[in-house]
Image (cartoon, rainbow, N blue to C red):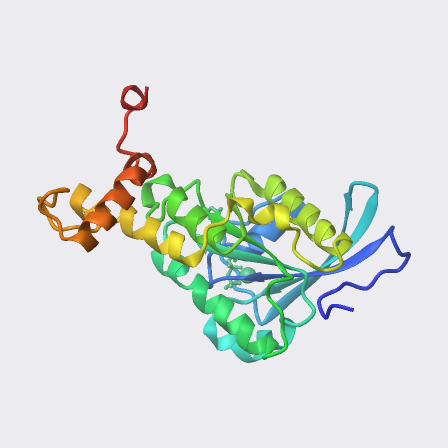
Length: 264
Ligand code: GTP
Ligand code: MG
């Protein structure tokens, strides 16, 4: 049996799963969980001390799901406490604050911490991750846009949702999709359903798209010297140019530079 497989009381009917939250301190992990479970929002910051634990029941299709939620403290000070809780997890809620670039940049470090704690035999492939780009209500302070967050998440085969624990936007949709994906995973013998990966990018594709999104002009976007043409290019450059030219329309759409008329 897969190490991540949850315990079943009645095979095929009720299911018990473990879910954890991860992400920097103050990004809104506890508030997201509170919004979904208690339908309320607390604006005062009450840092989680170590771990908060809760149990909730949800229904997915005809199944009753008992969810054990371990809400982790994001502060580095609590590393020793939370490192005990990564094992036997079926779902991870990975949160960043769209107004705090550091919290977005830290997502890789959170995955690395989990990987390290699971050890060489731990399998992160069979866990459902949902990325929450939280605090979307704070539009004035937003510095991580949707495409950047979505690209990071989808390049890893993770779900992605824009959320606000304050207004409730995206919260129910996020949890519903998250739980459905976990049930699908359990019904698929503990393996991530392959249908999820259709929207995913490989690491190379994601790196290329990131480079393109950050490029300063069309030459930079194509990865060639300014002024390069089919005639003036070396054979290697020419191959690269021709190869990239065929994608340039798609890339410009990605960069958001094509107007609706241009596309027509
Ligand atoms: P730790 O427990 O320290 O790891 O933090 P946390 O990630 O659990 O953050 P918490 O949920 O306690 O929220 C931190 C602060 O952000 C609080 O003051 C919340 O009220 C606020 N907050 C959380 N979510 C949102 C949101 O969607 N919008 C706004 N405007 N504020 C939010
Ligand atoms: Mg908390």
